[in-house]
Image (cartoon, rainbow, N blue to C red; front, side, top):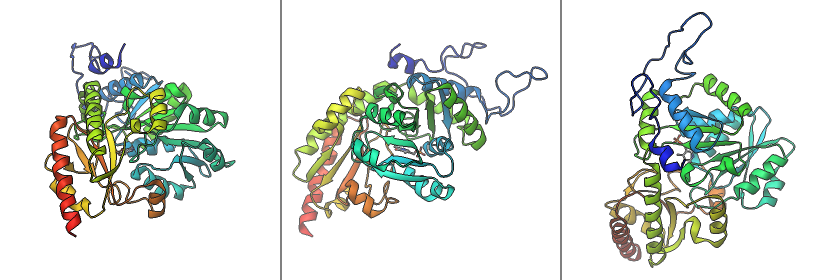
Length: 385
Ligand SMILES: *Cc1c(COP(=O)(O)O)cnc(C)c1O
């Protein structure tokens, strides 16, 4: 079936007793045993919950993987997957990485004896050079956050397989609607479902999908052992959001393209970052995904413009997060990327003139008018200073 159909049908035909079209929320944490040594499949909600199971089956199917796991946040999903590694293991990681992932790796997991090297994964030679005899995994975001660099996932996953590294892809920006990394050779996909999958800025959640039975068993053990599992109410809310993912992603993308065209022609903007704007990124992206999504970044001409620009916006909200129906804009230097050292930020190109936008599903004309007004005002005040 097509993704649109799978998405709209999530939870339907699952509650055989009542025929409920919208799958119910099972709040019960305990489940009665039918007899000694017997189980309905549900014993205790941390291990498995009927509402969460419907969501987990849905994401496994959407990502075309073996099993799905729902966690209490995207970070909880990443932490759970990192439980596959042991003291002394080394991982190669995308250079411009989500700041929270960087913080987990450097501030927490290094204390448990893991080590990380940050590499521009577009350069396979740099990946080979970063490898040590202790390398066990590679953690990839594509397109990256916030500069929309595209990694050739099939090539990197092939390299990982040759070296027996576990390949983990954070597919938050693309969603399985546009990109399915397991089909390109990845071992594990993780999501911050707080973003596009939930889609309405009203639920914090993370998802994991594994490619093989062995990995599914290992992650199931970790999911239960660590206990950062998703509550049934949030699982239900996430399924409610997922049903419209296809429609939303198409609109996010259509609006993002319209905004790129506007921003590229505005004298206050120096450069726009969006996967299909660069020939190399575009070529790789077209090979491995069916779209470029709804995230874009841009550099304004002058750092002085930023403050007035942000305070002049009337539709687009200056707020951290992404992937919801409402357009949001962030300032990576002081927000999402504040925990990344300045030296790395500079190498990556996260500078004080960079703004990152999560394009919502509003009418593109209203978003363009809002940007135009704020850019024009900021250019006037910028030049007065
Ligand atoms: C938000 C985000 C995360 C973390 O997810 P939470 O749900 O906030 O814990 C991880 N990766 C990416 C790319 C994100 O945007």
